[in-house]
Image (cartoon, rainbow, N blue to C red; front, side):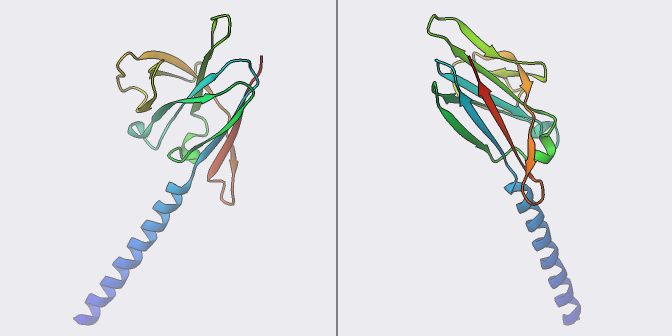
Length: 157
């Protein structure tokens, strides 16, 4: 009886370790985006992506990039294998003459706060929020197991 209990215990522990290893691998996957601002004004960038199911979809912004500067954004909660075709961005800025410029698209309509940082599900209400069209950003798989992804966004005049 004790030997049977010990075997069950060992099997249960082995299963828990295996599940923890698999979960740890997925949690370590990331998406890194390099932002290059070659324009004469500051740009603010937001991202959205699909998750495993609808509840895991995310939106997050703003990432400011000063004129003539570059910035790397590491989105640790974006699992590249789940979001390769459904990863998008929206960007905006104000030129020195006061003209507003945006980079948008038709990948997905997302509610954003145009003035304050935001984070959460793309359909969640945001006080003062507006709906914006996000543009698809092509990701490139990297790493030993192609679990991670990278992309570069360059904003030219």
